[in-house]
Length: 256
Image (tube, rainbow, N blue to C red):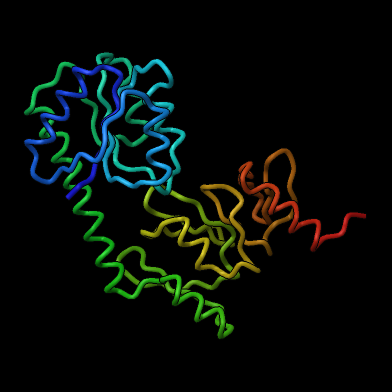
């Protein structure tokens, strides 16, 4: 069952989507909202798999609402709007589909079936990940407690042994993370950023942005909201992570 919510400032539009959802056996409507602010408060404590979001709303546009969602908790998105010019912006945010009002039940059904296919694929990937013994928080914690220098990552249809010291930084990409290495290569695996931040040793890795974790041994400096790394790259520092990072630098690298 896919849990979903609807967000639209038009009562008739909410009613139509609600009636359509009732006709889809794999959808469960958890709540409906006529503004984005209430929906945001709901999502702070509840989780759903799918959002139906109107784009043109008075308090905040649907595009801005989705863009501000935490990448790690962002559900699948189906935009609903009467304005076709917003379609490109919608798909830039990896929306599952874009329904132009007024839309029929057949159009709605095609969009949610696409979402269901993606959800089933995601669930299958998680099951495959678990059965393949891909890194978990407990496994990494046990390995690090024993002083191991490697973790195992499932990527490209195989399990790769990755040396922690070779990781320069880790980047979030929706439900995946991409690990960037000292030799310039990278691999991507199905793993949430939040779990990756917990699993890696905290004395070696630090989350500096909702989308980036850095190897502290590879940091060469910071300035103007950026962390510079020894491979001539940099990543942004998020406001929520800046204080922790600066505190670490001040403690471990006295200023002359």
